[in-house]
Image (cartoon, rainbow, N blue to C red):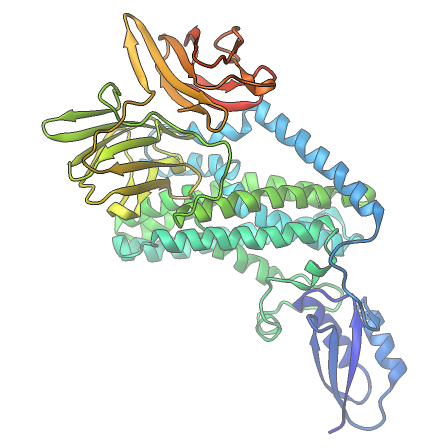
Length: 556
């Protein structure tokens, strides 16, 4: 049977292949059509004379053109960069507004452990506007924005359908998988490395998806994460030539989010596994997914409503948001894999010393005390001696946040913290670093294990009379070290920073907005002092005189 090859411009995913194939098969004489969007071509097998005009019409009917398309790395359209700048500004304003309103802090106010389906539903509601948005929300937002962009004439209801099917599939999938893990119990558990790889992979997928949405990297249009065309056709993804969207595919994608490493999801999975009952496991996971639906659907309504130039800006703004979430998840994934991708500012807590109240020698054991808060661990870095047993006492202040699921693979720790004190005993057998993170890699810390040599007395925390003294050292190379402290509500405290170098410019001064009106300047050889009273709980940044953050004081 004779064959020929035609080149097609404008295709970017496997759904495009399905559209073109279906139109080409309508051309008289065409017996088989195999389209490859990556190579921008179609291989045709035909009988009898080939209608070339019919081929051109078929490709045009599918929404594409014949011809060879040269793919650029960067767009040469100045308007694309102008619109991207506006989108970045909009995204920044929305972020600052959400931060000011405290939306990002909603994840830490769920109270105690889940004891019933009502509590599970509340946790789901919280997850829908916090941690789950970083993974699930970012993926569905990008996918829905792409769908709306490719179908600009669709009604708001039509553009909203992907979200409805995604959430319906998510709830159904969570019911099914919840029953399975309820039956399997403690046997079902993903390793820390697998969690890290999944998180990083999700971040990479979101990075590419966001790059497609901002429209300045045309080559990314040829990258897709859809199902193979043959499988997609069998699953009903191509139901009609007018659309490239599949309700089935959206529902399956929603169900598969069960395996994404969201901290809230993992907490509920552990809860479901602990029941050892498939019915209870299904109910727990199903109700949790139902609770996340309002937050995820809220994002869907926005992408369905916008059109025209406003819609174009929305897609670019969504792309910026997805890219930021992608970097967030990539960093978290690398963190879980034991790789610290963050350079520059990091939280450094007081190390162990004879006068550090967080690490003491008690009955032959190194006793380490740490608080687990809604937004991380404080303090989060310690220095301990090799060969001396460690009793790690973690006071969980909020057990329904991803910080309550703590992992330390080097010492075999994987524990879901309960309210109050949680005790972990281990023996540091060799010098080096023992890292620990939450289950999503968002929050982390470490133990620095040293040999038999004396541990130098570093800055830390102490008390003088009724005043709690917070000690740190300033150098131009390391800035303020340590730079994270915890004090109790009502405490009188003083931050004392020993300046080993003189400060220059903005970063040569320091203040604590919300706790102290003092602004002090670093002078080599001097110790500056900032006195304050911790009247109200919260996180208070340590900043330069112009407000650039360089540390934090947590009032609990």
